[in-house]
Length: 230
Image (cartoon, rainbow, N blue to C red):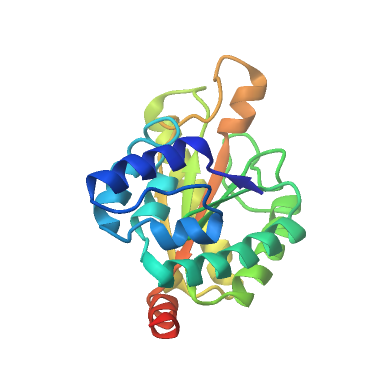
């Protein structure tokens, strides 16, 4: 399980000073959840969402923009730690990143969810991987899930945008058909606009053909966290 490390901590410290909050020092996942958003969750989330990673990482922006902060954020962070560990146990190939009060999960061809060339149907090994994910999502029903579709740079941009939409919606529909409540699910797509790796190599393209998921607390969990920590 990956951790957004020095860059995130440095940004949080700078922003915390701007907002007259205490700087973050050596925070673990749960502690980061408690600190981020303590001064102004929306402000910090918006700034970090535009600066973490390649500057266009909407997944991380969604996670950080959804923070509650304070002790309640620590409560949510603890719950997310446990859920992230369960995802890693069930799907060892997935790239699981814990940051703040949420989880970012990346699936590519090497991580259990992939599609035939120019196709968007979920089948075979991809269906088996998503079935295992469904089991974890049902264990933690008090979360919302954002599904993002991405492609490599091969082909026209408009075509890739449409293909990423079809693939993301195919995953969303699969989860819903397996019993994940539709009001927990949101779908977005970006085509080739947000590469994680170099599109000039076959290895890089394989990593860019991916589906990303963001898991954050829903309103029920946020209320529970506030009630439990007051």
